[in-house]
Length: 144
Image (cartoon, rainbow, N blue to C red; front, side, top):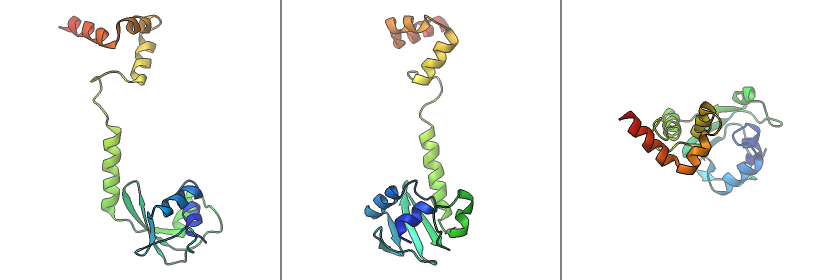
């Protein structure tokens, strides 16, 4: 089976085209050698994949006939990725999730919708005329 089809069939990439594009960018290698999308995969091959700034290592156990369900992936692949790579992925994900502390800075679109739902009709018209900065300045003066 071709390596692009294999990576798609074990659900490493969502589409075969994405897999082929990543292979063209030399982000996939077997052993130490970058491969082409047409490279045949055999059981026992060690595939190194660079995805989301993480270096994954997978060992080919078997070749599936077509795309497999998520529960069946371990039958065809053995994950040999270092644990520190997964920790790095967790750190990056938590850094992305945290974008600002609650209540600091301008409201996001979601915050504005929640304010509108809470305050009712006519509230957003008043803010649009005066602007958010004027609204927060008035409320800060009320608190002091």
